[in-house]
Length: 204
Image (cartoon, rainbow, N blue to C red; front, side, top):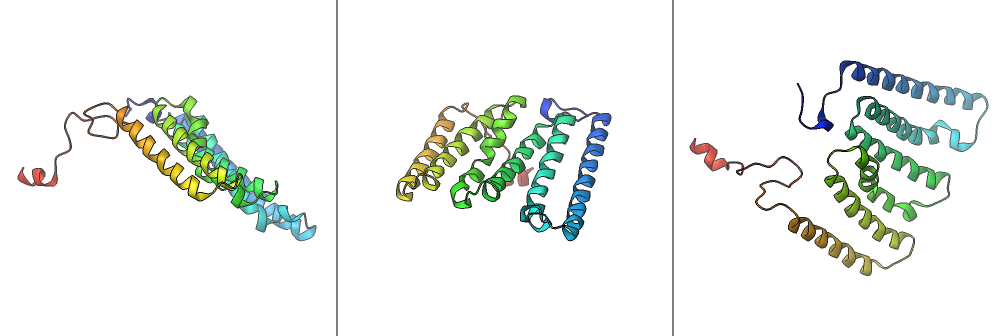
């Protein structure tokens, strides 16, 4: 079974097996790491950041990032590559707060920017770059506007209308640059005719 879309091509059995083996070993190492850290702290307590109660969250984000990245590299899958950037960004945000001394109210726009960051990291390996460009532009601009509030203390009475205008402009530009006569959203294969309605199906 094969697909015309290179990004959806099924991986070979060898690559799939290698990915499964590597990811399972990474998962085992993660569990051993948490267990070892627990017993080490029981005998000789480490700094608070190395306590299992604290480290389990960034460690979980890190291992999911590593597993996703490993899978994407081995089987050449851009979907899991995109997903890996989600967990990497969340891990970076955690480090900014717990190591860098920032507050979540200062860095929350990073979470809004996650789709843009993930698409920016994936676009060079993706065959369909259009949808990634849309994600980068839309979520990138929204997060930038929100940073004006979290870091620049710009009023919501300014940022709110700006976000509304930006969303409207994005929809408008997307509409006028789309191919005419499409029955779909433009990012998937198009039909020559619309899907039949429920009433038309009943008449058959």
